[in-house]
Image 1 (cartoon, rainbow, N blue to C red):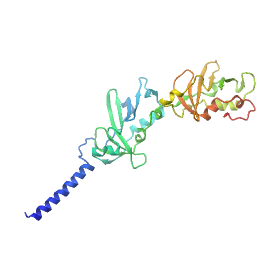
Image 2: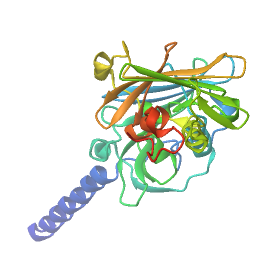
Image 3: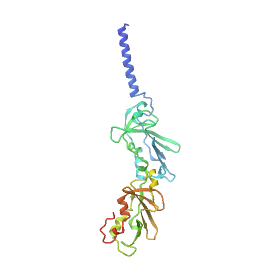
Image 4: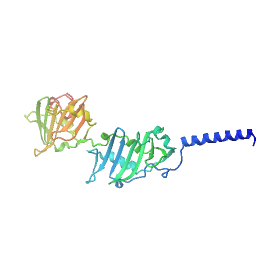
Amino acid sequence: MNPKQLKRIAIALVVLLFFWGMSEILGGKRDDTEVGVVLPALDASEFDGVTFATDSGTTVLTRTVDNSWMVNGFETDQGALDELFEAVGESVELELVATSALVHERMGVDSVSGIRVSFVRGNETVAAAIFGKSGSEYGSRYARSAAANFVYLYTGALANLVTRPVSGWRDKRIIDISADSVFRVTVERSGEQYSLVRTGAEWQFETGSPADSGAMHRMLGRFQTLDASSFPEEAQLDSIDFDPPDRQVTLFNSSGDTLTSLMFDSTNAAYWVQQASGGYIYRILAWQADQMVPADSTVRAGAEGTGNE
């Protein structure tokens, strides 16, 4: 074999080694056992806990003994849970985009920067996956099984749910009281108080002055299916002060029993709200508070106000 032939063989080997090296970097060895799987389709009965863990915090959903769910110690929103159950039960089409662990960090699916999702039952992990950065398609996200290297473009609904904060899983319902069940209302604003009573369909002030029954109906309508816009962050709790509250409203039924008593503390363009008996603190918008705890002038018969004074 002459030198020219040896040179050609050497060049061919270099080219072969180059392409082999590139395939290892871009593709990697296909030694995974769960090809085509990020998470198996799951039924809600198959797990009693879900964890979404990141380097900045962890969201934990847990089924309680009475079959309700809690999120980080708070009551959960049933609608949010239904979204989760539907998302994990659906069959998702996956597009394979990488097969090597060398690209995990770049796609955000490494065990440090990725969103680590685990479904558990008791002490057993039923399924686990890692979700990473958003993909090129709307609503998609890179994801892989926690036990495999293959990375897929995941376009199922779970791709959005994995980034939902704790507040997004919490139950935002503050109260749900029918206007027909209310027979007496006491309102306190800026240290002043007034009360109204209902006789039949008509309302009047406790002093005997007539009230605008239409305005009262609109006011009480705000107490039916009242949901919070958000919740206070941990750092905001020390600044919330209900002693005394800026406003307070109490609703009574026909027997004189308290249906609800809400305290309000003003904040930027909104109010913090809490039951007088304690419990969770919620945030509602200022215009909602104005209509729930109106100035007495806006509910007097013949008044032209709108409840926003």
